[in-house]
Image (tube, rainbow, N blue to C red; front, side, top):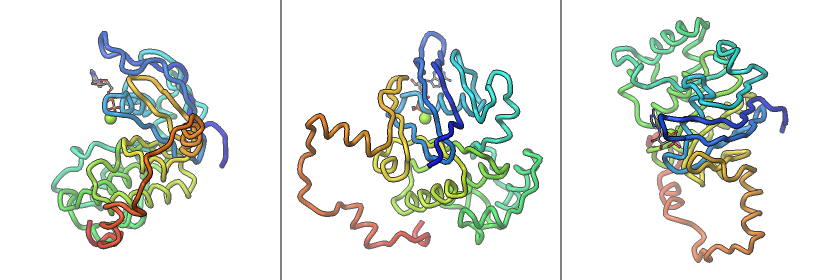
Length: 254
Ligand code: ADP
Ligand code: MG
């Protein structure tokens, strides 16, 4: 992996009135990695993400994205990042092709809707409206909208929450696909299995602080080194394995 830093966050704080939601966190994201921000609800993941996405003001700290300081070069940062748009902006009367044209117009960026839809496996839905899509398809379309401006970095906030097991796996494949083309991915999740499989490195957040940051392997090895032992698993598979085995992992059942 290329270890050049593409995002640097130092002593980031965020106050909502007298409540401090982010309490001085520091971390770096490397170019080309899938970086996971993990933690329970309320940990401060979305706040952190939205500040880096330039959608929210920070209270304190320093953020550099691809060499640009967020205090000075907001527009330069906006040009190179991909952010999931609010699905409430997906006008119900427009089909997917029309929506892509609309968003491309906002970015002032030429786009080939067919190519973009193919990338997220929705080419046969080009003439469908957003509301006609399944949950997994909606998420894939929303990820497609992050790619319109050909960003260096994309931000995905809980993209798999509420999806069924196949749709989650399809989304993992899509995210890996995007990364394999050189895009850095920052993702939040509270599914640890997902983070373990998908992320190169993870930061675990709790109550506004980062309490651990490393590769999933390292974090697990560190825990094992403390003498921790997991209650023995008697079975070689779990119910989710049964479900996937029976129903397959293709797009058909989404
Ligand atoms: P996460 O994404 O990890 O669930 P959030 O960043 O959404 O966490 O929220 C972190 C904390 O900040 C929570 O306690 C939440 O209630 C609070 N919070 C988030 N947004 C606001 C806001 N606009 N005003 C006040 N408090 C907020
Ligand atoms: Mg959140």
